Length: 244
Image (cartoon, rainbow, N blue to C red):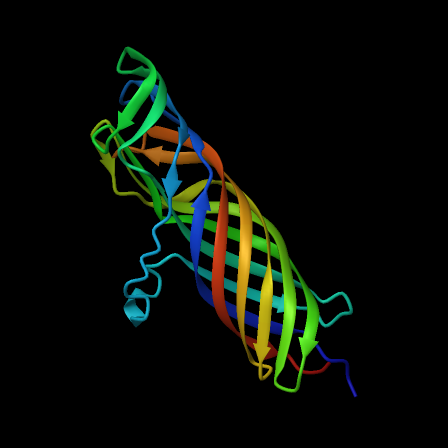
């Protein structure tokens, strides 16, 4: 009788997100003339769950998608490719300390930041593409169910899509490399009848945007870093690969 091989799995779900304040640097000295910084800007997410149940709207909300493989070993380790679609919106009409120069005029004061001045949103999205190492710790099982604690650590690129407006120069955005992300998460997984499962995870991430293009000509640049906290609720499908 051969040794049992591992199992593939696929996971789909949705999330809510919370962000730390961020210091954001805006610069364009090529086709415009500004170089200024927002100090401690607040941001929020946007769940967009109103019509998630419609087949043509599955990817409109903040969603998570994972493809992974569990090795059949005593350490219960796995490897996973994950795509986390979060949304990050710098809150409009907040008072932020702005420092730098705008078209030759120096600024260093608390300022009401309206969309006519600056609007910035990573909403299509604040995307984390990561390769994760996964650890499973089985806690309880019966004939039909198995409860496990799950832990993950991973990192990868930000393949994001940013919508912005700076001093009236609007950009509807496009997908490109924006920076890097590293994350750590923990949660619980309930396997149901071997092939199906539901899972919840709480993930903390460090996010560093170094290449966010601004303006219709993409000659502006925004850079910032922040921490995110993401709560995920997921369902999935296991596919055991049989025996060697």
